[in-house]
Length: 219
Image 1 (cartoon, rainbow, N blue to C red):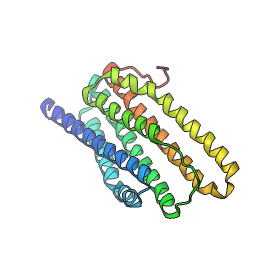
Image 2 (cartoon, one colour):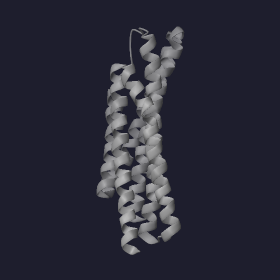
Image 3 (cartoon, rainbow, N blue to C red):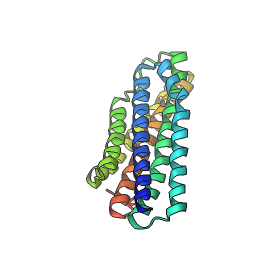
Image 4 (spheres, rainbow, N blue to C red):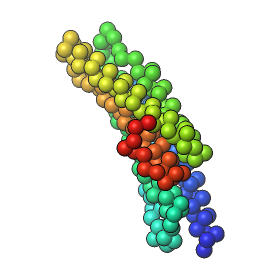
C-alpha cells in the first residue's frame, strides 16, 4: 500500500507541475495580447479556459481520493493540502487571463485614440517573473526563491495603484473615453491579482517545506 500511495503522490505532483506550465503559458499569451491588442490571441485564451478547469477538477478529485483512502499524516498531509491550494490559485490565475482577454477584445474592437496609453511593460514583466519564480520554488522546494516572490508583491500593488490614479486623472480630462479607460484599469487589476496568486503559491511552498504559515507576515 505504501508503494502505491507514493506512486499516487508522484502522479499528483506531475499533474500540478503540468498545470503550472500550462497556466504560465496562458499568462505569456495574455501579456502578448496586452502588448499587441490582438483579438485573435484573446479569443484563443478564452476558448482554452475549459482545459484548465478540467485539469483543476481532476487534480482536486485525486487529492480528495488520497485523503479518503490513505489518511496521510505529517509531511504527506501537508503536501496534499498544499497541492489543493496551489491548484486553486493556478485555476484563478487562468481566470484572470480570460478576464484580460475579454478586456483586450473590447479595446481591439474600438481602437479609440486617447492621445496616450498606459505603459504596462514593467508590470507585465514583474507579474510574469513572479509566477515563473513561484513555480520554480515549487519545482525545487526552494523557500529562498519563494520568499523573494513574496517581497515583489508590494511592487506590483504599487504599480496597480499608480495606474488607478492615472485612470482617475485621465477620466476627468477625457470623460468620453471613460469606458475605454476603465478597461485599461481592469487589465491592471487582473495583473495585480495574478501577482497575488503567485504570492499565494510561494507562501504555500514555504508552508510545504517548513510547516510554517507565513501569509500574514511581512517579508
